[in-house]
Image (cartoon, rainbow, N blue to C red; front, side, top):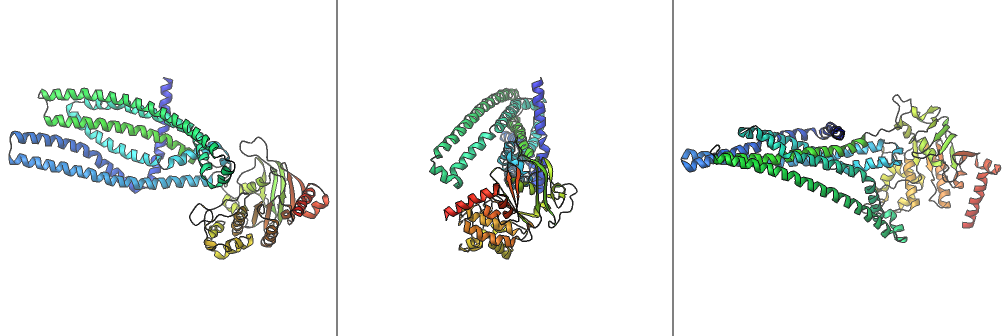
Length: 608
C-alpha cells in the first residue's frame, strides 16, 4: 500500500509541472493556442456527427430499397452530400491544425531556447565546475526541441479526443449506460502501460546522462579540428573509437531491454481490449438478429464502439505521454530554476566611473567548488589606481583567480574585495563589470569577421570602425588584419566558409584588440604576451604602456620582461604574496624575483 501511495504521490508531483508547461506554451504564442483550441473543439464533434450520419444513411438506403420513391432517394442523396461535406471539412481543419502546430512548435522551440540561453548567461561561473549542473543543462538542451512541442500537441489531442469521446458516449448511451463504462475499462491497461513504461524510461534517461555526455565527448574528439593533430600523431583515434562504441553498445542494450518489456505489456493491454470488444460486438449482433435494433444501429454501434475504443486508447496514451513530457519538462524546469549566488544587491550603491584610490583585497579566503584546499587564505593585496601592477609566480599560485574575483565571477568565502573602499557585493553587477576589460589566459576564438571579433568587446558601438582600427593598432593586430584580402571583413576560424585560421599568437592579438576596444578604466590581462616572441612583445609593450596611461592595469604574467615595465610587482607563491616592489627594488632585494629574472635573461641570451 505504501508503494502504491508513493507512486501516486510521485505521479501527482510530476503532473504539477503541467500548469507551468501550459504557461510556457501560452507565453510562446497566445494566438496559436486560441486558434488550436477552437479547431480542436470543432474537430472533436465531427467524428460523432459522421457516425450518426452513417446510421441515418444506412437506414435510409435500406428503406429506399424496400419502398423506393423520389422523396426517399432525395433524402439518401442529401445525407450522402452531408457526409461528404463533413468529411472534407474534417480533413481541411486537420490540415489547418497541422500548420498551426508547426508554427506553434517553432515559436515554442525558440521561446524555450531563449529561456535556456538567458539562464546560461546568468548562472554563476561555479556552476560550470559541477557535473550535476552539466547533466541538467544537457537534458534541458536535449529535450528543448521536442518536449514542449509534444506537450502542446498532446494537450490539443486530449482536448479534441475528450470532445469526441463525450460525443461518442452520448451516442452509445442509447444502447445502455453500461457500454461507455465497458469502453473505459477496456482501455485502462493502456494507461498503466504508458505510465509504467514512461517512468522507467525517464529514470533510465536520467541515469544514462553521464554515459551519453561521455559518448558525445568522444565523438567530438574524433570529429573536431581541435584534437585532430594529436589524434593523428599519437594514433589514438581507434582508442577513443573503442570507448565510444563500448558506451553506445551499453546504452543500446539497455534501450532494447526497455523496449522489449514495453512491447510485451502493450500486447497484453491490446489483447484485453480486443476480448472485451469482441464480447460487446457479439451482444449487439444478437440484439440485431432478435429485431431489437436496425442495421443502421448495428453500423452506428460498430463504428462508435470501435472508434471510441481507439480514441480512448489514444486519449489514455496521450495522458500517459503527458505524464512523460511532464517528467522530462521537470529537467528543463530544474535547470531554469537554478538560482545564481553572485547577484546584484537589491539596493546597489552608486558605481564610480573610475578608480581614485584603488582595488583592495582584504583577508580574502577562496576555494573552488568541490576543492578541499583554499586557493587563497587570509589574502591581502592592494592595486593602486591608475598604476600598472604585475603579478608573477609559478603555476597554481592563484594568480588567475585574482582576475576572476575582481570581475566578481565568484565571491570569496571570507574577506572582501573593495573598489575605492566599497565592497564589490554592494555594487550593481553589470555596472561593476562595465568598468573592467579582460584578456583571459585562454581567450575565446569567435568565428566571425575580424572587425566583429574586436567589436564584441563593446557591443554598444559595433559600427565604430575608427575605434576598431585603433584597438587593433594598440594590440598589434592591425598588421595581421592588413594581410587579409578582405581586411576587417575577413571571416576568422574554419567553422564557416571563406574562414581563415590564425596562429595562437594572432588569436591573442585579436583578443587583446577586443579587450582594448572596451575602453574601460580597469584593464586585467592574463598572460598577454605568452604567444609572442621577445621582439613582438617589446613592440607591443611600448604601444600598450602608452595606451594604458591613466588606467588601472593588472598584468598576470610569467614573463619578467613584461613584469619589469610595471609600476609595482607582486610575487605570488602558494596563494600568498612573498615579495613586493618595483623591478629595481626586487632586483636589489636579490630574492625569488631576482633569481627568476636572471634565469629568464640567461635563456633569452642562449636563444639569441
